[in-house]
Amino acid sequence: MLKLSVLGWSVMATFAVIGCASVDVRGVGTGTTQASYELRGKTMTQLEVEAQRLCPRGHEVQHRWQRYSRPETEDGKVATWWNRAVKFVNPPPDDDAQLTVLCKA
Image 1 (cartoon, rainbow, N blue to C red):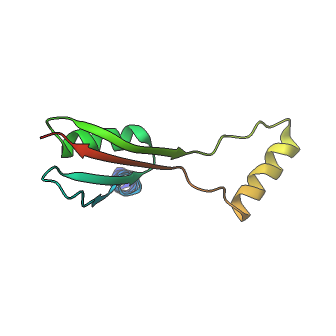
Image 2: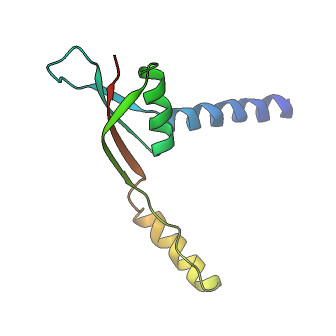
């Protein structure tokens, strides 16, 4: 019974991670026959993989942008506790990446 419970939690955790790692893809009108996409996600690597999937013949990057939060250095147990408490109450902005690509014909 315990193994089933652990397996169930493992499956739920896997789907939660997959759900958090989604990429938002929007088509962009360019006035040409070439497909163009704006991709948004958590990491630039994730967006590059999605761009390669969308543009199997290659792509040209039109715009690239990324923001990430750095882990803070902690100087002791009290500082560690305080930083964790502040992050719990007021979480830092999420990591964010944006990539605009023009698919090659």
